[in-house]
Image (cartoon, rainbow, N blue to C red; front, side):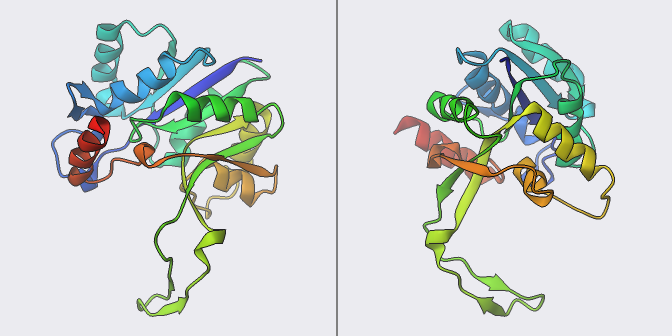
Amino acid sequence: MKTIAIILASGSGERFGLDVPKQFVKIEGKTILEHAIEAFENHKLVDEIILVTNPDYIDLSKEIILKNSYKKITKVLKGGKTRKDSSYNGIMAINEKEAGVLIHDAARPFVDSQIIENCILALDKYKAICTAIESVDTLVEIDENNIVQNIPNRKFYMRAQTPQAFDLKIIKKAHELAQNAKDLTFTDDCGLVNQFALAKIFIVKGNEKNNKITYPIDIEVAGIVRKI
């Protein structure tokens, strides 16, 4: 079965405070987007890549692809207003009736090949996969007034990362159902599958190097981590 990676790079980078979205900022001479693409481009188990990018930066994205002669990118699509919309655009562009689908945030540029491989292999047994790491911090539940309501046992909680992997039919159905549930908001695709109880979600272990670039300080930290 074909394995298709969807890389979501359509964010505006508002929290980053720069003139361009964060996926076009460079770390060690390459843009964050290039690092993310190459993790999948160079992986032997990934057959195809679909890039969903910021509509205002389609041309720049295509220039980056051309410059690097990436072979696996078959489509460059415009992202939507939300992450869910962008993910939907990527999924609905898949022509195959059956496939394994990896959905990855370009803002996690240093995902390693082992995580990708573990996600793909897990699809032999499970229909939905979430990459996650243990929480080393105590979690607190608060109310609208910032008053702590509950302090759960952190051993039962993990921090979700990407890639997340799915059987194509499952994730397509999840997004189709979500189109009729306009009041629902989700921060990732496993949230959709869980909302509609379409499959059990298996956890593949991630790592700290796969953290998301969100703020400018994350660029500095990422550079340090890469040198370790």
